[in-house]
Length: 432
Image 1 (cartoon, rainbow, N blue to C red):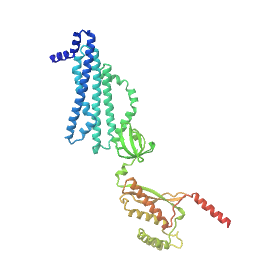
Image 2: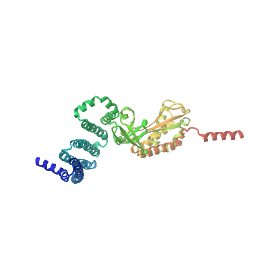
Image 3: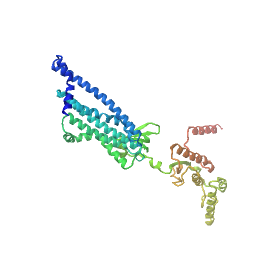
Image 4: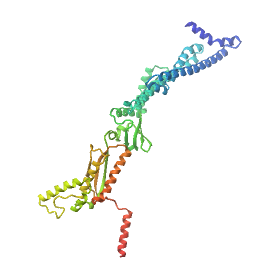
């Protein structure tokens, strides 16, 4: 070991001794020798870094081609082999620089100081590469696909950077890491203030994951932030939502537990998607049906059996109670609205796109001064948005078109054309 040291020392001083023998003063010869040695060392490091990096990367690629797991493939994408290959040049510096710069203590301290800083940063980069690899690999696993992995990795990355910066500052100020950490604790209030959003985001990420509030891929509606679309990313500070118009909205992660929003996952996981809409029936179009009306309505196949059965019950009740049926309000009588409600119910039960195992009803809502709302409540089997809208539109197209067959009218607020028609009629009547 001593012989190697003497050999390296003699090689590093060869140029200096040669220049002194040629008559150059010792100081100038020493600086020229130092400059040449540093340039030679720099060239050696660049060459070693290039060769070792190529060797490590190519060897790693050859190794990954023989394995079935994709974890090592993500290691290559995150530059892990490149960072590992830079460890050797650092070892070369530690082995050669103390000998080369033995007579230049000030320069030696600077080189060792810069090398130590680079070593700390290299360790941080290696850990960062491992975290990125782990995140990308876990995202390929089905059980972790919808978990907020970005949030967890960002927290770990912040912790690693804090530790790395502590080592950097301890190196700069020549203090131990423990003493630096103790002094850092005194400034914890300032640190908490600076990282308030990060801490809130971290706590929110944990609550979101533990309570299963939101997953990646969920469709959420957050009116406060104008978000209506699929969650594409959950980070430490924000949640990214791709709206259905292909725009993106970012939501603070903490808002997911602080504010109210709508998550449509339950609908997507259920066997059907709810259709809940109302038809506004004009009140003065509702009436009792006559025998002639019933005979006419019996030609509608969906309700013919119901009308036959229901009318027998009505007639039996009226007869047993000696009801005067000359006035329809006496006793029991069917109405066109009640028959239409039964028709709508039968139509929904017969519709192939409606899930019959979930709620299915046609009901009256509270009458308003203008209309009687007749609400349809059912669930479509197909939950895809475009198909869902087609099914809902198909149902209401049919029901609205069926209203005249029951002598019912759809309520519409009067428009400008209605007033114009009325004015024209009044004008023509006045002329007559």
